[in-house]
Image (cartoon, rainbow, N blue to C red; front, top):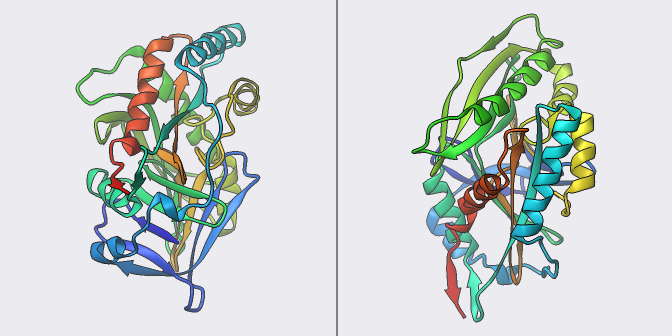
Amino acid sequence: MILFKFPFKEVFYTLNSDTPLKNTIKFHSFDNLKEITFDGSFQPITEHEILDLNITSQSIQQEYHGTPETKNEYLARIENVIEIIKENQLPKVVISRQKWVDTPEHETIDLGKTFLKLCKDYPNAFIHLFVDKNEAWIGATPEVLGQYNKNTEDFETMSLAGTLPVSEDWSEKEIEEQKPVSTYIQSVLSRYSQQVEISPVYDHISGNIKHLRNDFKAVVSRQDIPTLIKELHPTPAVCGVPKDLCSEIIKNTEKNNRAFYAGYIQTEQDNETTCYVNLRCAQLFRNGILLYAGGGITALSEPEKEWKETEMKADAVLQRLTFLGA
């Protein structure tokens, strides 16, 4: 079962697998080693029909029995990463953490209502909820990895990095964090297109937080799109610069496996391929929810501030959870 909504659209969709295959949604893990594919045709579904499905955490078979790191463990880990950054003179490394929230005793999570709340509160995000036999995830991602029009051969993407509450002013740390993301995307696109258009930097509002953003547009041959997507992922916004070294640091310093967090969601329609970076997401279990959040660490980072940033990002899903009494 899958539910989803495209950015800036008001229609909710599910997939009808009984029709001849027309569309697909594919979830790629961060390390590209795992995929989950949903096939069928995009079928509109109403709010009332979603609620009638009665999707709750009791629909999920898996239970969680792990132990995410404490705040002190996270702070110590960030201190260590900052030292690595300084030693190697790195612009940025993206480090993530997990946050576990138990389902209250005698209650269950109403996943349909939670999905609808995310849709209402994050109209410019790609919202998804799926419950598969082995996995269940929910998310509201603000970031497009790539959007391709098969007719015009226009490819569009964005550089999204730096995070602050909407009311705060940008500092040097956020500005310096976003720059290498834009530089990396421009360098990749320039290998596939003679002309790359880049917008000025502007604020991207996502709920109660904001990011710095550039938009990119280029004409790219259709046969190059799969290679381009693989080269863009993971972008510096979810990995760091340089990619190979930062991937190694992530592997050696993160306690958790990112799974589908910071991977990408690929939607295929007749004339369009769109890939979304899987952010502001959580893995669902029968006994609770495992939230994922990360942040760009630089030489100017303050561990306590980084902790607060991940808490803000985790709230995107956490504050929309709707519980039902048993």
